[in-house]
Length: 247
Image (cartoon, rainbow, N blue to C red; front, side, top):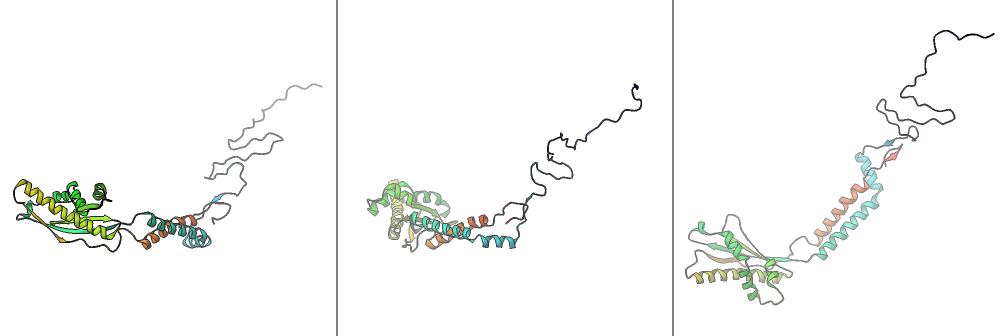
């Protein structure tokens, strides 16, 4: 007996939620990334396994640094060796200073900037080189070794000379100071008038006892501090672990 089409309402169509993962028969389910509730679960990562970054406390910092003491020791030794090496490689320089005073009837007419420039000029250094009588020193080396500066708010001029030997430094400073006075006199004689100002040495150069710059001990301490400064953050650096605290 043949029956006709069955009457009645049609069954509702199957609708999938946008967050539903459809799986074909015979295939394993895939792990999708959930965007709900502000949580993110990476594809392929086992459930419950996350990256944990622990907040570093002073106690934890001390524990890490004590456990990684070889790193700190290596940094300190490297810095100490570096500081001593720099002290040995860099040339030792001694600096001597001769002090002069410029006088004039009218102090306002004294141009200390011009006097300072004259003291370190080529004319003065050439005159000083002749007075020293040292063929091993060139005019360029003498110019690099000489410096002049004015004491602030005064008519006092400081002439400095740097050399590898302390006695050479003192002799060089005195030679430059005397050459400066000689050049001033020659300028006055060439003009044929009396100089508007006079200058004299009020404190001859003394032989320096210690070199310019840090000594061996200061260089070693500086290198040691630098090594510790680099090694300490490295030894205390936090590490990222999976499903566990930082160590």
